[in-house]
Amino acid sequence: MTAHDDLDRQLNDFLRDGPTELPYESFDAVRDRTEQTGQWVVIGPWRIPDMNKIVTIGLGAAVVVVAIFIGAQLFGSPSGGFGSQPTPSPDPTATPAQSVAEPSSSVAAGLPEGPHLLSEATDGGVPITVTIAAPAWEGDPGIGFLQWNEGADPPDGAGMIAFQSREYYVYGDPCHWPTTRPDTPATTVDELVDALANQASREASAPEDITVDGNTGKKIILDMADDVDIDACDEPEYPLFGVPGDDLARYSQGSGQIEELWIVDVDGLIVVLDGLYYTDTPQNAVDEVRAILASATFDGP
Amino acid sequence: MYAALVDQAKRGDREAFDSLARLTGDRCMAIAFRILRDFDLADDAVQSALLTAWRELRALRDPERFEPWLHRILTNACYAEARRRRRWSEGIRLLSVEPVHGTDDYATVDNRDQLERAFRRLTVQQRAVLVFHHYLGLPLPEVAVRIGIPVGTVKSRMHHAKRALRASLDAEARTPPTSQERMA
Image 1 (spheres, each protein chain N blue to C red):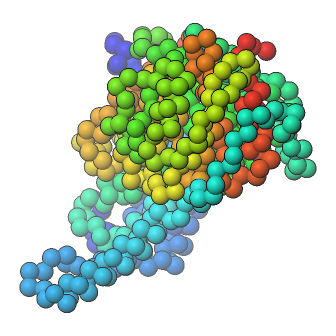
Image 2: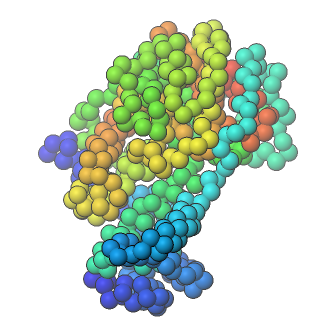
Image 3: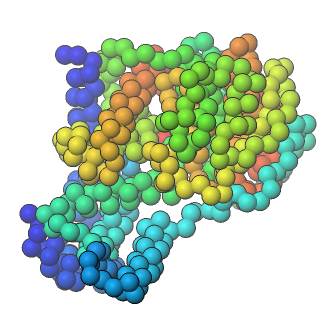
């Protein structure tokens, strides 16, 4: 049996498991909702050879109205506002001791204060450790991410994730990523920052020099454009970059998303410390994200 | 198969549509769960899809194609659910520093949890292609119809999905998950 066959067999077996019935109450819920919902009227026929111009215009206008209504019903409004507020100013001097706000009284039990191994050293990589100065974070440091205890989703969440690779492919246009993948990857901090700064459909801050755990690099803040419809993109994703073996290593998740990237060279390895927040994220959470990014070390606990 | 009920439902017969929903809902639930890997999200996606189907039923030209048409609506509902409620952890991927090349290592992997984790790391669009092909057993051209994308895109997603699965399984085979690691 070939490896190809074996993966197919495993997939077949894996997908066979799982529920196969919709709960009765769900059928009832659908029935109740259809009782309260009318069917849309289909305007047509779409082409009538002898239709006079006035009727054509009338039907055209009606189609537009229905299309807008259908669009509103299908796509709704995004879960959060797109980023139209000014990007918070980068604060390269931030340190955990200076910037971490007191946790609110509503802080749920999460990760304790102190250092956490964010990412173990993989082949040729480095361990990444970050320090949480306040018990306001949760998540799974073992697989490389943390989120604020209020969540990392729009409209006001926060989180951070770390990547490490020697090669990054920054798409020329994230909305058209399958066709704008560069032929050669970025292999230095400067190349990566330059590619990110010039990526279409994102507003980028001016890169700033930083030092993290004695390693030099640059910081750049990317603000997702406010007119992006991810559903309309090529294969509906909106990635920042890919790495060898993963075309969608990091992709944007929603409206109003801001990525604060601290990119450092660790002995030839490019480490991307990716802080995530939104235009509506409280400033104290943004400060905590920056404090965690600044706390990173690369030599293990 | 459902043509008579569809014709009745298109004329506003809610009883007929209720029958259609009960005939097709279980299969929709099975598909949605396998794409979303979450019972509640799948439930919501199916309810949303059925309601959309009711609203738009009069636009369905061929009653015989009701189920493929419903599955396309369902797929979009799954995408919407995933996007609305996507947890931060779903955007996270374990990265290898060096390119991961396919090996036969994964052939020895029989741990279902490893495949679950690897599957969850795929995009929801990739999962949908795998579910329609491997769970429903549909040929790729029909998968393209059900999902509403070109056949070439189906093939591309299939290729990338399987490559990503192999990479994840290979990585896990080399580095067993720590006690901290849990399913996203």
